Image (cartoon, rainbow, N blue to C red; front, side, top):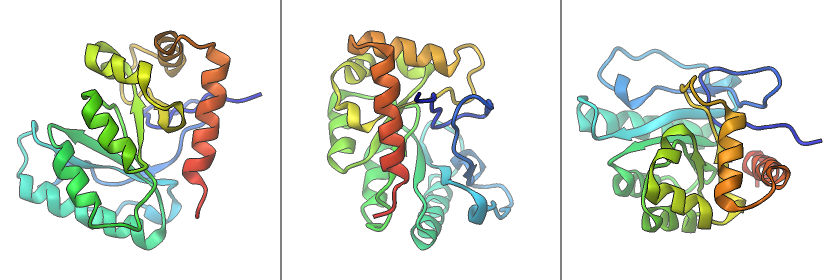
Length: 193
């Protein structure tokens, strides 16, 4: 029987599959650097750009590229944090063609942005904040299920089980089929070419 997968959480649960992450968040781009345990992680991140947070954009871009280089070298997937920076994130990702396994976590955006991300072969993950946005709910309802993940992120108010339930309802599909589809996505995402 498939188990629930929480692609991005700050509160792992033993009954739910959650990849181990190592990375430096863009909010910390101006802080002294520490070396995350990339060798023992499943996924690099979360990394990316947040153009609403008061941290130098140049420092964020440098940190993001540094982590993409590491992900390419050790052949690990990447979890992206992107706020008001989708076009820039995609431009920078294009410079690292070896980094193919990418998930935009907590996606909140338009159908056009989603289509651009999905056309690159990347994945979208949805959590509580995503579910609050009418335009993002439209993305959830219409996107290809083969590129979809669910997450709880740091939000204790909505469990990943509840996220799955709400996503299944938006997609007008049985919860069991969504769980199976996300498990297939997870296996494909972590498979090395």
